[in-house]
Image (cartoon, rainbow, N blue to C red; front, side, top):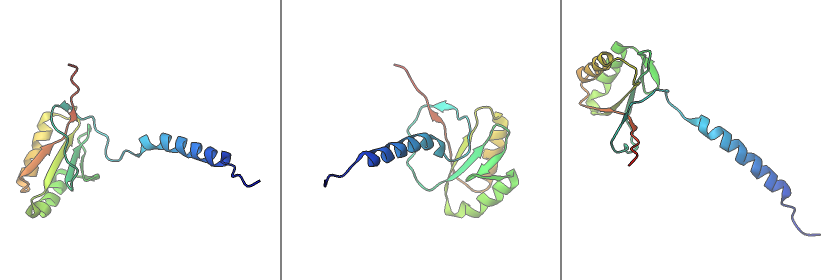
Length: 124
């Protein structure tokens, strides 16, 4: 009998498929913030500096927690490269705190500061 039995192969593939389907949603990286919704185009993937403000007003610079003064020092050191900085702030963060952070970013010499939001869904 020279036929190949494919039943074990199919069993292994189905198990792997289930494992990948369960683990794929868990692979989301980054800091969890509740972004506000706004209209606009999606950003092209590129190398950029990510600044995240969580609900409890903790600041993360590229997924590393920093203080307000530490953030400014790090941004001053890279401001000569004229990078794009993208700010993600939780919708429940007070507006005044966001303005303070934006002021520190501008004082550090960063000219390009973008605000990241989730796309608004419109039912037309």
